[in-house]
Image (cartoon, rainbow, N blue to C red; front, side):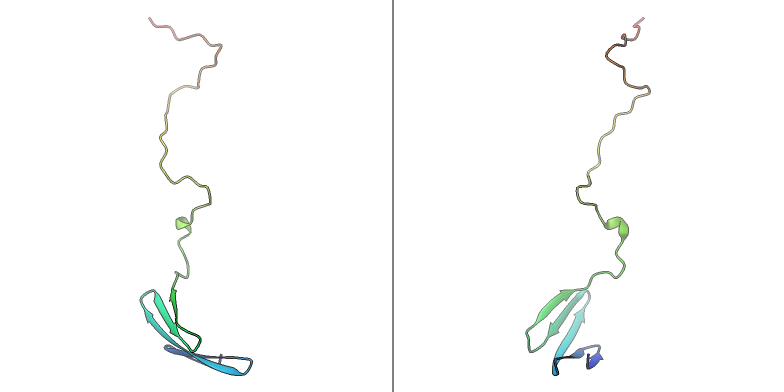
Length: 82
């Protein structure tokens, strides 16, 4: 890096200096140089870890059935219906 200012950066690679003009509008960043224009999007520096979703995870709410007792086995007798 040769120089850096908020709206311009000059980089040197193998002794060749190249200027890059930088403009930022909100999260969008526009960079113009002799190599061509580039549009970038700034990402949050510290993303919310709760927003990350593991691959294959289920996001939809699932219905649940609750009952007060353990499931009956195939050998148990039906309850008395008195």
